[in-house]
Each structure stands twice: as C-alpha cells, then as structure tokens.
Length: 339
Image (cartoon, rainbow, N blue to C red; front, side):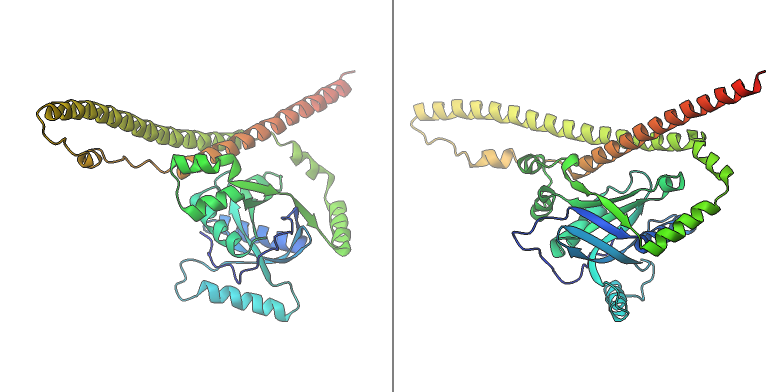
C-alpha cells in the first residue's frame, strides 16, 4: 500500500476546472518503467513511487518521479524520506511539487482496497493528484500500458462517510464503473530525445520486425482466463453471502409480523378484561436489525472482472488480426514459390 502522506494540502479554487489530461516527460516514464521491471524480476512485488510536477491550467505535467522506500526497512521514515528527496530535487532546479503516485500492476489486479484508500488520502489533500498504473506484463508483450486514474466525487463521498452498506451505495449512486475516472495520458519528449529515438529506430535490424507477428499467445490468454475465473468465483461467494442476508431479513420480518399479530390479539384480550396492554419496547429487543454485509469488496471484484474482460477482448482481437496478416503473408509466399 502506498504511503498515505501526500505533502501539504493544495486545493484548487472553486471555479477552476478539473484535470483534462496528464502530460508525462519521457524521463519520468523511463524511470517508472525501470523501477517496475526491477521489482517484478527481483522480488515479484509491485513497485510504487511518487510523481512530481506541476499543474498548468487543466494540464497536469509530470516531469519526474522517485520510488518509495521498501516496507521491510524499519530504520527509514517514509515521510522524512520523501521530504528529503523533494528538497534535494528543488536544490537542482527540478519540479518538486507532489502531484500523485504510481504503481505497477499485472493486467487487472491493481483495483483493490489499498489503492482506493491511498488515492483517497492523496486526492483529499492534493486535489489535482492522480495515480498512474503501469502494466508490466502487457508492456513485455509489446504494448506500452500507462493509465492515469482519479477518484470520482461519488467515491470520495463514499469514503468520507465510511459506510459501504447497500443502502448508502444506492443513495450515492456508486458502482464499480463510477469508482474511478480515467484521465488521458500524453507522453512528451524534447527535440533532442526525438532525434535520438529516430537514430535508434534506424539501427534496429529489419528481421527484428518479425517479432510483431509472434503468435505464441496461448500462455497469456490462459493466465488472463484463470484470473477471470478466480474473480468470478469470488463474486459468486459474495453473492451467496448477500442472498443469505436477504433470506435472514425476510425470515426475521415474517417472525416479527407473526409476533405483532399475536401481541395484538393478546392486547385485545387484556383490554376486554380492563387490563393495561403489553408494552411494545420488547419488540425491538427481540428483533434486532441484522447488519447488512459490506458491498465494497464485491464492487471491487466486479471492477476487476470488467478489466479482465476488456483485456481478453482486446487481446483476442489483436491475435485474430495477427492470424489474418500471417495467413495473407503465407499465401503470398506460397504464390511466389509456385512456378
């Protein structure tokens, strides 16, 4: 879980619009990618770090970043570490304003309770802050995956009230599709960097381009389907719990109605005998309200299922396109080889 400290509070004026898009420098992107892949290969852990930059009108510029310290290092104070890092960056004339944080992910496993809580703390203290999710597995397959998210006003209000019962979520109109809003990301490089990238692209051998038609996609698709099945099973267990709760509420209501009918007949008999009716106070003691199950975890699991489904659909579409292209190239090759 990311550190909840987010620096001094900076609130946008009431009449200022929200962030329209995020502009990231190539340096910040490369540092984030390097840190994420190092953590994935060495410790199989998620990488987390702070994003630095500034806000220009409706554009959030991210110009630098640095990783968070390891959680197993008890001798280091995380807040002091971040303050020291920003102080050192300020001395070398680098943007040092805290504008959010980043985290590595593996397909759709980034959506969880710790991420929601961390972004809530960030966004309530630094209103323009974002969380950038970098997908390591998808990037290793040739698709750079960088996405920026912000909590919606409904999700922030939900966490402020700290009530996740079905009634509260229905009143706030909060669902898994309204927890986050995605902010577009634009990567910007300097002219010198663009020149260097063009020179590097010319140095790549032509045979390297054949890797773009790699059809070995069974392992990736299998992994995503297994994760999707696990999330569906988990959601099914949550549905069983909620159905059991509804059955208990219905059974209690039926018992309460029978008790009220019986009490009404007893009071009518006592009234005929000129006796005082029985009090109704003990009804609430006999039939205490059954606490409703928390619906935050099922909502998060539903969001994970949607993310996995979107990835699988996109992945299958790309695989089918590769198959058709490969088939056309194979037919063309066979046509040339025949006399």
